[in-house]
Every structure is written in C-alpha cells, then in structure tokens.
Amino acid sequence: MRRVLVLGCPGAGKSTLARSLGEALSLPVVHLDKLWWKSGWVNRTEGEFDALLDAVLLGEEWVIDGNYLRTLPRRLERCDAVVLLDYPRRVCLLRALRRILTWRGRTRPDMAADCPERLDGEFVRWIWEFHRTQRPQVLELLDGWTGELRVFRSPCACAGFLAKLEREGQAWRKF
Image 1 (cartoon, rainbow, N blue to C red):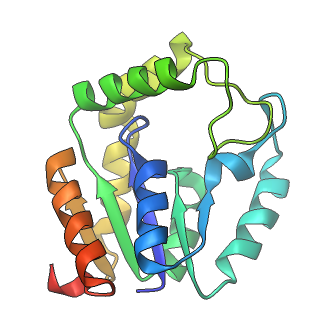
Image 2 (spheres, rainbow, N blue to C red):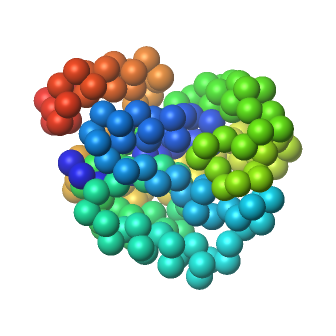
C-alpha cells in the first residue's frame, strides 16, 4: 500500500488521519484543501487545481486527504487503498466545532497560508448535508472500485486500526 486516499464528511478527521497514516507508513501527505486554496481563502481555478493534483498523482507514494468529488475518479484510478471515515453527522459537527475553537483565527497546517480557521453557515450546512448529497456519490464510486477499502463508522474503530498499523508497520492487510 503506497497510495492512499482518506475520504469522509468535513470534520470527520481526514487530515489528522492522513498525517497519522503518513507517519506510520512513511508516506508523504497531501491535503487537497492546501492545493485548492491560495492565501487569504482565494480558491484556485479548476485548471490550476487539476494541474497540481495531476503532478501529485504521478508520484508513486502518497496519502491524499479530501473529497473534491469531481476529481475522485482520477484519484481512485491511481490509489491502491481508501480509508472512508463514515461517521454520524453529530460526530462530524462536534469535531468541526472543536477544530474551529482550537484553531480559531489561526491557519491549520493542512491549509494554505493566511486561511485562518473560521465558522460560517455554509460550512455547517456542508457538514449537515454531506450524508444526503455527497456521501451517496462517494459510496457509488467506491462500489465499483477494486482496491483495499477500510470503512470506519466510529472514531474508536479507526483509532484501533491506526494503533494496530502503528504497531505492525506495513501490516495493512492483517487488520
């Protein structure tokens, strides 16, 4: 397992898990939010984003976190493993709130420079609607995909997997 995608609802902990997987597996980590946003919450064009993503996908080793459904088919073609954080809405909302309170006014390491953490209605709506709008599309794309898939429905289950992975190194398939 050398190319891993981490997917899930906003607030689920994709970036945190990606960093942990990268460390446990000695793989570079790429945060799609960092590719999409430029300084000051200015987004890149789709063309700019696609060029950056294509350069990453050419690599032989990586952990990529983020949904960005438009590009998910391309990423699935190149990855050999997917971790889906399929947590309940309330868990994602609480985790997002904790993240906002922790990082409020400061830029997280998985974001572009000068993109301080903030709370806005659009973000809360995105989390609230994810299970109805984006989750079915993600599941549909994963349904025909043949690589290694891990779906975690709770943070506790994911933590157990990560602990085992950290103990056993490359023992992804032994879990």
